[in-house]
Image: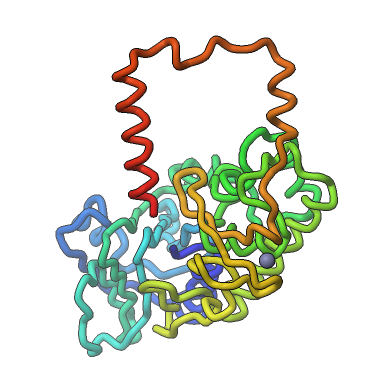
Length: 317
Ligand code: ZN
């Protein structure tokens, strides 16, 4: 959180305000979200915003060079878990946890607020900015079916893990991965390589459809998320599985369950999204049997491992 639809909503909001506006001054608190606030302030003061776009979950704000011989600078902002980026009147009361203020030439301010401080505001040259983005995967909002298929095709990884992997699809996160898998009726622990052609087709359509619907409703406000105008999103009202553990499936009334996959909570309907069958297990059994791992470690090691596993499971709940 925030994921692709939330960042896209903020980008669209800022696009109507910032291009052409000059940064009069930048103020930043002594915090980790900005690496070197003094240098940042010095270098961006006087610059105008040229363009704003979304790259995965990043916001990329391009600044016009101060003089023709200067290199264009780029602000790259990641909202982390609780980041907010709003344009407000400079006289508006400052909310707690507001860390960065871009004072604009029209009397307004672009403010970056982040209670949990996992967000980042970076200033980069064009080369550095491209370096940051070059390993990101396909944009799931724009990826056609062939590109989508190519990204996951043949991968022996769980589909949920692939959807969350920013090197595979940039911008997807837990909410929209769970919602897409429910709509496509695919269990989150299925191996991508085992998905049938029509399942991949369904998942692609579900991902695109859900992201588009979420953007139309200005994202999901499940924690601190608000758009650039301070408005909350409304897509959380349409969530079908995310954070609905124990509630009834909207399709079949089965109770929604939660498992941990790739270290993250995955919400699914056990009826609509059947667990992967033992096809993979059978295939594995044809390989020469490995020496049982149990024999390699002592009884105490095994006991402590199973204890910590039980603890982890407990914690995950
Ligand atoms: Zn169901």
